[in-house]
Amino acid sequence: MSVQKENIIDFIYAEAALIDERKFSEWLNLFAEDGLYWMPLEFGQQEERLTTSLMHEDKLMLTVRVERLHGERTFSQRPKSRCHHLLQRPEILHISKDTIKTRTAFHYTETRLDEQFFLVGWSEHTLRPADHSFHIVRKQVNLINPESAHRNIQLFV
Image (cartoon, rainbow, N blue to C red; front, side, top):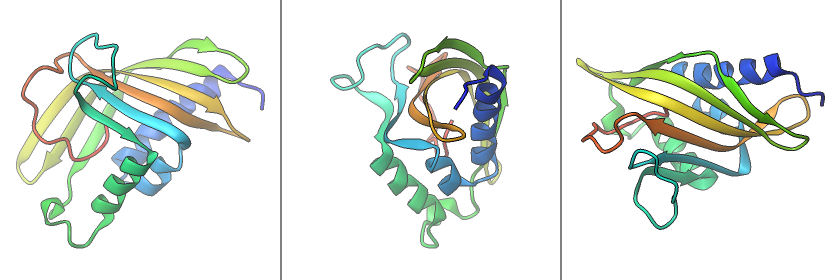
């Protein structure tokens, strides 16, 4: 696959749209089998395994979360949470034959019933080219205020 910058940018936008549209199974399929979703607990945190994180989930844990969101007996999701991503145009940091790195600033809104909260920051994607698309090897979600007391994040930033 020839890697085009516009295809990478379109992929990042499409990934956020899948979450916003509650197409969690399709979103999960974007992850490589060794994929990781990480949200650091401290601003500028580099260590992910020996330090507490807001989220640190491999594909198995992401699968469990997606199944919970689809579950009929998930009473914390009645009514279901909804979200919206507002993304700045993704910046491509690095492209090589087998790895692509991007950075995308975002505003994220999540709502359920009459409660609504906002998160702001940037996400860093590490992508691996696949047949006619990409797989997410790593998605790191950096909040501008990770140390703050946050509500339960039900969906995916």
